[in-house]
Length: 496
Length: 84
Image (cartoon, rainbow over all chains, first blue to last red; front, side):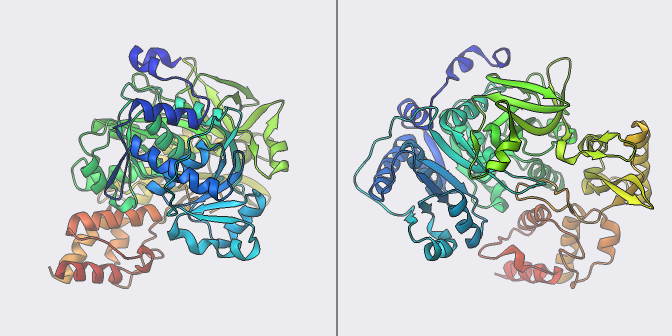
């Protein structure tokens, strides 16, 4: 499908690798002198990184790490994270990526649930190990600062070998650890190369956590795969200064950050994202079509996509030359999709193996080898995919009719003065009805000075409400002064 | 720059981040709480910090954003940094 949207030379360079180890070896040989990582004022070429990684492999093997062992990695975004991640995975061990915001109790809980015996940690995170050290002294702790003069080569690692465990976001349930094998990681990385022509030897700026599937695969691994330069922005408040200095061509963002960047540009009446930026890949939450249109006005292509931790990056993406702002694009090749009662089910090389240590969740997640995404979707006549809602969120009305709140929210999110919305069911005197909370978009609202804002917002909402089928219409409107409570990946939490 | 001038510039920044700017900003005092009175989210706080750095040409360094609770805390920090 994507062949026709990519020039032939670029398309032919997008090849399959069995493992992170194989991909990394290839990139070091192909782009030895390219700068791969820029962090904290230092630049690291592919050759230099391989030197550091090969020495850190020795640190790991000297500590007892063998192929197949589970090794937790606890580090904020940094060069040390990249070095440790590559060392662990190219040895054929499994990297369990612990989000840096976890507290010491949760780190200990993870050591029990995921049954790991090694933790590689960045020294700034050392305090979070205290509980593990006390309660599970058998866990070997290894600082990313530890060094060795001896080099250990990368191991042969197959596609079936487990590679990484990533935490799922979860806006309604608890986080789970999705185990992805090397083939899935590489297929997800490869999918990140499709849709735009400027893919190889580009300039990425990292603003997402490397423990997030979008940060790890769509940013780091896609960048390493393509011989690109990844600049690690250590603090998001410095994002625009870093952009001005580094001049990235590609940004991967969640919608909340993309909207913030747009508003900053509007307030200071200049494009704060720089004149080099060509693309923003946007996903991990619903992308309002408003963002696509507004970015187009300043010459930046924002491409919405859809992906899950379980699918190792994107399932679908909008190609640059033929995109639809309210769609999440075409499904990538190498996957099988089927829609069962509106729910998207997936199979493919990019899919995760299981939730680690969660047999009950695995039973619920799979059926006949298909992963049940829990997302309600539709596909249009051109093959574009649309997310309609989440199965878990479906509201069954007293009339027996099913309503997907996200589907209704999408309609209200098309109103420019509405930044975000939330639809839910309420009950009064035994009668069930739908309620809507909205958080207005301040930049758009500012255009209507002297107008009764509340009345105006309600009028706009009512115009849309009237176009909905009667059973999907909302009966109560709450205009919020405060933004919605959000998950760490900035998704709106259903329980406010 | 006087304290009043700082407040005016801060109001211009806040206008873009709060959902009901006219009402909230007309009632703004130095004691207004950033989270409970102005209802700033984490992304809203990020916006304000970036916008303050850009407007006042100062830097938020070696400070924890969560330590800023009121408008007064922010104004004090800006004044201190401008005078440096």
